[in-house]
Structures are given as structure tokens and as C-alpha cells.
Length: 350
Image (cartoon, rainbow, N blue to C red; front, side, top):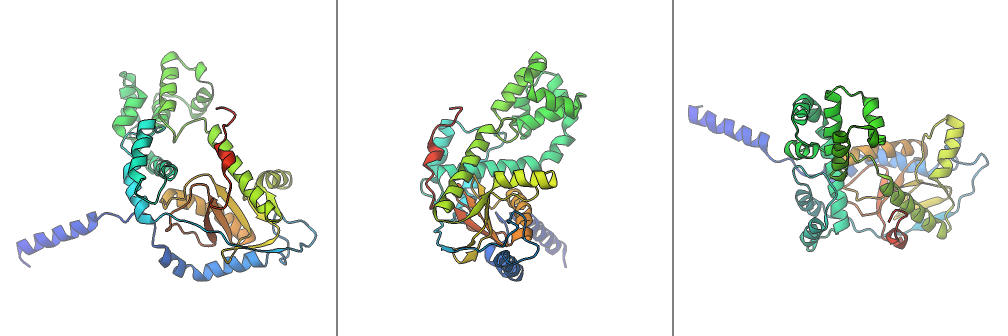
């Protein structure tokens, strides 16, 4: 091989290495084929849960005589290609805060011709920012001394966040830690900002205002999530399905085990199939089910605990889901049949 041929060969290899990674996870069809046998086991575990000994967690001691429900649930998943296009639009370097009205309108115009809503796009943005935050944390920690030096020289936390592309609150944490603050002191100070000196108070307020990922106060988001769970449980009870809700299972498991062990949002005490698939439990997610690695791994770990106990179940996503999102033993559903009017009503803080 001549010198020019070798150079062309090297450039070709470099091009292959630098080839853009495919957006999202492995193709759903391939995963379904690969997991066919294990999914069958999960489905059988869901079907035999009423006759199993010992009885599964959360079931009454006396034998259950389950009613049978076969429900049809029309879903409208978002094409992966559309999610990929929107993903490139909704995340910007140095931008971790809540989206202002102008930016929302910009995103709305962008998705107008796509099979995604503004709410789905904003929820996708949140998932991507969470992943970006977690996966870049090691890099952030490695720059702690450099960031702390800039901070001591007067650069604000928000400016450091924009320059280095890390969430403001996480930047603030590593800066304070590099300046000698203990983790407990940081935690206590963030709970009581008035205990900090004036500059730190001002930096905290500015960082909180521009950070929706690492924000200390997520109470309003949790209130909406809890309400969505109630709406979902109410819907199934209106169909006549017997079930247990998460709060009562949490209380029961705290008494029996000292902590919650396995607490899906809904545990069915009847034999329920949805779109032909056995569903022993349901978890409600008040967000868009994006085909984003971090979110997918987090959900898989959580759902596996439920599958191990009761067999196959389902997730109902408030804002729909990607058509390529796949977890073995988990049926993906959107909120199409539900009346979500209560979610539009003003919350207690509005």
C-alpha cells in the first residue's frame, strides 16, 4: 500500500469513528425480538399472580376472586425522527432555566408542522437537560478549582454557568465545596438562604431563577404529578377495576418493612389486559416518555422492581411517548382516554 493509499485509509477510519451517533436507543423491533422470551416470562408472572404462593406484596391474605377486564387504549406515539428534530431545537448551550414566553412561542412555531406538541417539546427538553447534567457532572467536578477562582475574582455563578455550560445550582455547589464548604453546610444553607452572606444569598437567588434542572424547590411539579396519579386511578375505578393506590401501599410497607419497598402508583387486584397485554400494575409519569438514555435507564431500574414482584405492567405518560421507547414487560400508554381538566385548574400557589 502506497503512502497516499495509507492516508486515505486512515482518513476513512477517522470518518467512521467520527460518524454521528444515531439518536435514541436501539431499534424497538430489534429489542422486542431479542426480549421475546423474557417478556413471555414477565407476562406469565402477571397472569399467575392471583394463584401464586406466597401471595405477592400488596395483595390481601385471603384469596382474590378477580374480575376480568379487557381494555382498548388508543395511543398516538411520537415518531423518533420527529423527536430527534425537536431535540436539536430545544436545548441550547448554557441554557438551563425555565423557558420564557418568547422562547415558548419560538418552539411552538417550530413544532407546528411536526407530530409533537409544545408541552411534549418542553418535557423532552427537561429530559435532555437532566441527562446532560448527570453525564457532565464529572467534567464539572474536574473544573471546580478553576470555577472557584473565577468566582473569587467576582464572576457570577450564572455567567460561569453560561460560559462552561453547566447548570447554575450545580456550579454553585462545586464552587462552595472548592472554597471549603462541607456538603452539610451547603445543604443547610440552600434550605435557609438567609443564613448566608449577602453575595451568596444573591448568587443563590440568581442561580435558582435560571435553573430548572437542579432547582431546590420542585413542589409545584410534584403536586401536578400527584394529581395526575389521582386522575388515572379514578379512571380505572370508574371502569370498575379494583386497585390499590400508592399512598396506602407506602404506609403499609413502612409499617411492615420500615420503608417503602415496591410502590407502583396503581396495583390491580383484578385481571386487567390493555390492548391484549397483561397489566398487573401501572406507574404514572407526568412527563413525555422520551427515547433518552438517562431517562430510559432510570425507568427500567424502577420498573424492574415491580416486574420482579407482580410481572408485566404499564406506564402512562402525561405527555405521550416516543414510538421507539421500549422496556421489556412494560406497556407504553399515553393519557388519551383521560379527562385532564383538573390539571388545568389553578394550583394552590397560583
